[in-house]
Amino acid sequence: MVQKIKAIKCPHCGSVHKSQITNMSYQCEQCMTEYFLDNDDINIHVKHTHITTPTKSTPYKYRCFILLVGIIFITLIVYLISNKSKKTLITSVQIETKTTITVPEVVTQVKNGIQVLSDMKQAVDHRALNASMINMGCYDNAVTGCNELLLDRLLLLTGKTGLKLNSLNKPILQKWISSSQSISLTSWLGLSKEDVLSIGNVADKKAQQIANQIQLAKQKMFHEWLRGLEFVDIPEYVNQYTWQQLLTWDQLQWQQKLGVSRSKAILYHELTQSQALQNVAKDLKHYHIQGF
Image (cartoon, rainbow, N blue to C red; front, side, top):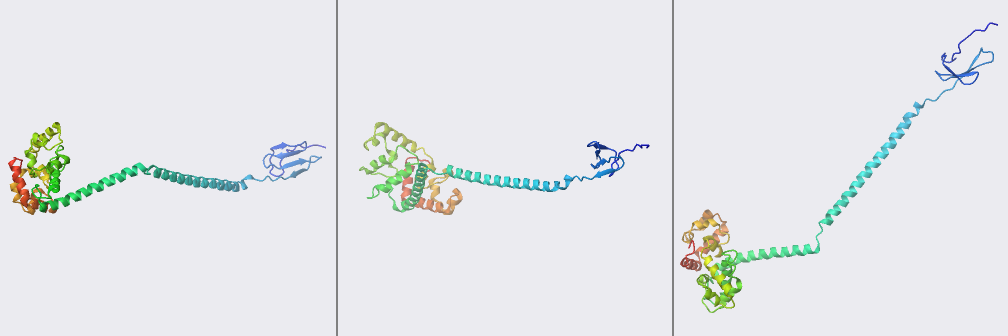
């Protein structure tokens, strides 16, 4: 019997590309179909094998993966926000702790507050003193009971507000006023070193300092003397005027010429019209004080 040569083809797709599995069985490399030959090499038996395509399950896996990543991302964001809030809280607590006032600081602030209140009281007392001094007189100790007010006037005149004479301090002035001498607001301008020594308990060096400051006081500017005579905060350019000119001003002129407030203009006008202060101005003219 004549044998015919035939190519072994895949009965499913007709491909001749195959892989031999056993002696009589093959697998198509194109469609992966397994087939084998029977004993007479005539019939070809086909074994169909369906390989599951993995792409069908891939979208589900991807969805699971994306969901997992999303959960992790959200968890991380929540953690970071929570951690930042804790840090902010800690920072706030630290700031509050740093600004906590200690006991010594409280004491210092209380002392400063007391000093401020004391300064305010002195300012109020000073304004009240200005208002009362005008009508009370006491520019000398000729009248009984004027020693205390005369001392206040002298401290105002020679102190920081007026002439700034450090050596003529309160103890010296108190001793001088308490003596049996007749004393006025300006009579200290005639004191010599020997007169100061006669006050009592004054060292020679101290007496010389006081005598020197008395001579220095005679050279002070017009506005410095006025400030010591209760014209508080009067501007320096009042130096272009004289006491005789100030006597002629009304309240409006005080405001216009010196730019002071209405309340100060009223006070300054009353001061210049006071007969007692006009007598003081005459004494200052006698000592050749500038502006008088």
